[in-house]
Each structure stands twice: as structure tokens, then as C-alpha cells.
Image (cartoon, rainbow, N blue to C red; front, side):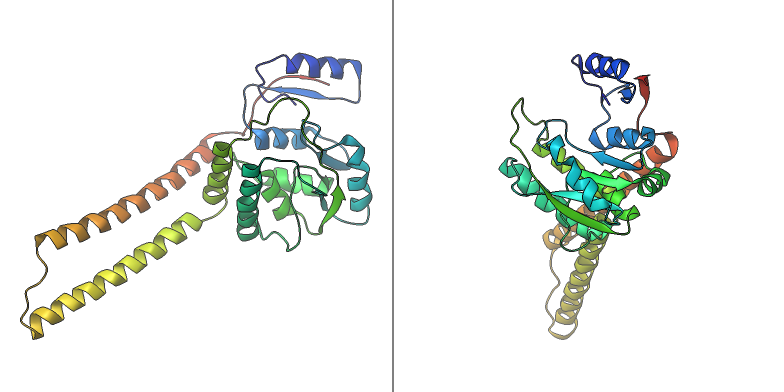
Length: 267
């Protein structure tokens, strides 16, 4: 699978497929991102078991047999759990944040560690493909569509060539995808803030009324009123913006046929 790489990756992948009938190669029209590319691979795969892994060889192919042995014990989905993860510090922090969201949104089982080195069966793949979305998040879709999930210990090697392009910005984009496409958390949080502010406003109004009615003290002046109005209007605009994001994503989902387009392939 070539996800719109600007180098000669497609030529190399296509050549391998031409010389090995067991290899299928697909070239996406442009870079759609890791999760869309993996979804395309799931759609084209035909095996009883499907395995995904990073292409930088930090997941040694020699460890695949451990995944196969574990899933043959009767599991639907098995994640490789690394003995020691060889990633940069910011990626480890990103993993902690994403892991928290996976627990809250996809009900990740306690004690299960997620990774891109994983194996799942054909039935799970079919259920994942039946989930219609233009913003796929593969770990979440797997968690939603697997019944029995397990880990197995595997090695995780250091990267020997090149540098990871998984930046802090991409981690933030992934968190945004989780929060907006698969949950209503932002709306719930903002609604709670709006309710709290409303209660505070009512309390303040009651306080001003009591002072004016029973203590013959004047109510706050123009400045206080403007500050309150500005603050409340700001919260309203913020909530409207979040709602707009949801509406935009919904329209995009309805108007697009699929999250990727294949421009060439070799089977």
C-alpha cells in the first residue's frame, strides 16, 4: 500500500507484486493518512487473519508468530505489547492521552495495551468495513467490533533508518478526530460549562436583587454588565463553533463516497 508517497515507493512496491503472485499492491491517489490507508488494506485483504504493523521495522517480522499463536487460542483481536517501547518522549505522552480517550470512547478493556502491531480475524474485519466513516480510526473500530481481546509480549526495535513523521501536530489531529468523530465529549464539556455559568449568573442576579430590594443598595453598573455579557456571549460563540464543526463533519460524511481513492494497483 502506497499512501501517496512522493518518492519511488510505488515503483518498488509494484515491482515486488509483479514478481511475487502472493503480494498485492495498491497506490492511493494522494496521502489520505495512516488510518485510511489501513482501512483500504483491510478492504482488499482476503486472509483468515489480518496483521498490521509499522513499515519502519520497529515491529520485527520475526515476532509475527507470537501474534498468530495468541489469536489461535480463540481471541478475535490481539495487540502486540512491547517489552520496551523505543519511541521519543512526546510520542509516549501522546500514547497516554490517546489511551485515555480509547478507554472513555471505545470502552477499551482494562489492562489491554494498544499498538499498531496487531492481528484480527476475518469477522472483525467485515464488521469494521461495515462501519461507514470518512474519518476512520482503526484501533477504535477494532475495539468496537471485537469481542475477545488480548495482548502478547513482542519486541520493539529502535528505528535504524530515517525519522518518524508522527509529529505533535499529528497527535493533536488524531485526538481531535477521536473527540469530534467518535464522541460528544466537547459538547458535553461545553454544555456543563454553560450550565455552571448560567447558575453563577442566576446567583449573581439574585444577590444583586436582594441588595437592591432589602438593603437599598444600587445594582452593579455598566462596566459589570458589559463584562458579564461579553463573557457569556463568548461562551455562546464557542459552543456554536463546536456545533459548526460537528455539522461540517456530518455534511462531509454524507457527501463523500469513501475515505480513499485507488489510482493504480498490481495483483
